[in-house]
Image (cartoon, rainbow, N blue to C red):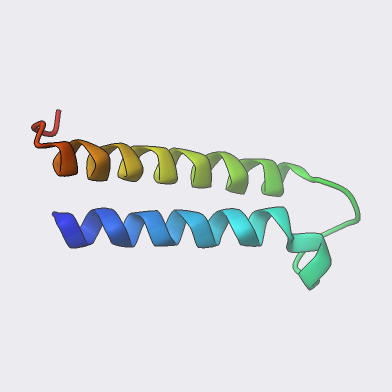
Length: 65
């Protein structure tokens, strides 16, 4: 499970970077912050938050929920 948490953390971070910079890298559908970028950013935040919480809990010795 440890490797899975770190993998999800990296994927969430990468998704967030791509979603936030989609217009700059040419992946945006139209200029401005669209609904796909909002959705990608929200999903990335959830992935990063959950995986980071699990990693921190494990390092402190608390069991996962």
